Length: 84
Image 1 (tube, rainbow, N blue to C red):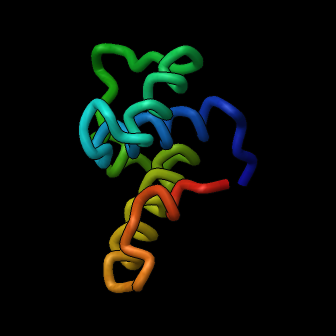
Image 2 (cartoon, one colour; image 1 turned 120 degrees about the horizontal axis):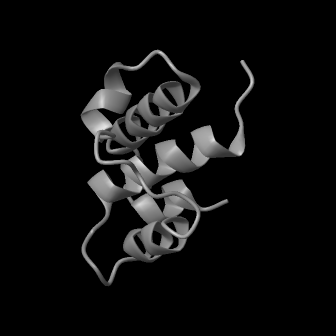
């Protein structure tokens, strides 16, 4: 599948919006930076994205699954997960 920048930004936006740890967290800072590139429409939501069979939906589901798998790992830290 071909993933463009919009798909990646959309998936990460909703992932960070759902899984940040408060306004002082690194995830929230990343979400704020990302909101300069992506602003969801009023009909867009993470629950809609979870059900979509789109590239952005696939990226979002993989991020969530990876985070849940990581909860059993010794690196139970979203900062480690998001480091790239």
